[in-house]
Length: 259
Ligand code: PGA
Image 1: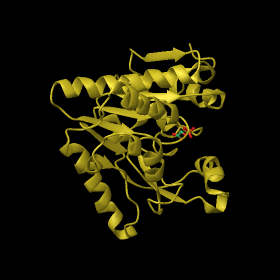
Image 2 (image 1 turned 90 degrees about the horizontal axis):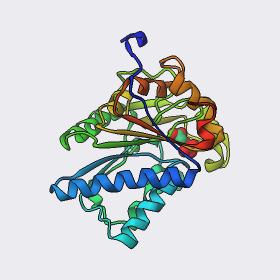
Image 3 (image 1 turned 90 degrees about the vertical axis):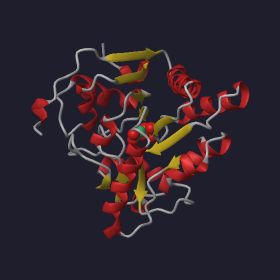
Image 4 (image 1 turned 60 degrees about the vertical axis):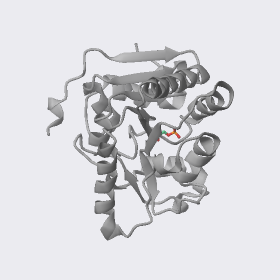
């Protein structure tokens, strides 16, 4: 599909906050409201979740809502966007470990409802595994809400520059900027995996609602490109401009010059 066919959606939803905490709490409360609304109807809430620095306070607030205000995750089904390849789930750099530490071990989500790409399968099996992951999302009726961060190179999930609008869950090569940004976690660039499994742009855009959270000055340049620049595979987050169900949640610093 040519990128020219993607027209910016006319009704861009932009929610600006004075600081990162306020923006994160807003996102957490949107997620909590969805969970409660689905509970009231006896339904599951199917969440697409993200990792990285950006969502940490979102998860902290969700844990607080569970511990202090009785928010139950019993009806939550989760799918994480991505995982390094290869990595062991028990490795501290793995996104399985991250999700356990920041959210899952603190709440009452059912273990069988947690889906994080597991990336120990042989390379020749990975294609089938990725298909299964997509089928699993579909079997729950799709994602009700997808939480996204954004990389400094414009990636969403690990849809790196060059990713297509129609991409599905797949094995990807990590971009130099992504690996550079991960080197502190891995204790050196040479320790950062070269590959990952990531939901595709097409997987993400099927979500009924998408919240992109960006915090801090280091995201302001890419936020400007992603929201106001050309829609191009070179900035995968720019694909979101063509979707009406996207809400951008930014703190003052990430918003930069955006109006
Ligand atoms: P960060 O990463 O939250 O650690 O900045 C965001 C992303 O790469 O999507």
